Amino acid sequence: MCERIDAEQKTITELVSLLPDVHSWKDEYENVVYEDGATELLNAALQPLRDACDNCPACILSAIRQKGIHVGIVTDFNYSEEAKSAWSETHNESQQYF
Image 1 (cartoon, rainbow, N blue to C red):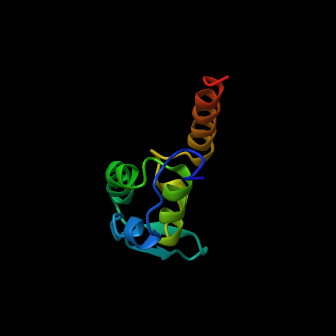
Image 2 (cartoon, helix red, strand yellow):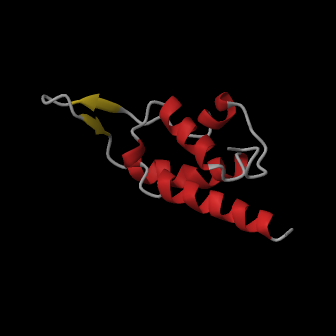
């Protein structure tokens, strides 16, 4: 996706390092539970992550998943919406040349 939206692809190691370590555990029903404040910590880390990967939704999603974090806890990130927007912007930019 980076190439298609004119973003510079960074290494996944670099991107993952921008996310905080949040502690999680499984409750008695095998649900993953995160420490208090995890959502706020992760949402605060989104802007540096976005800056590092030129706001590429696929890179953001990859970093979150590679860190072992459930995407739903990062409430300020919606892959579907952000990918749709990125593709739309790319399409609109390409149409300007015709």
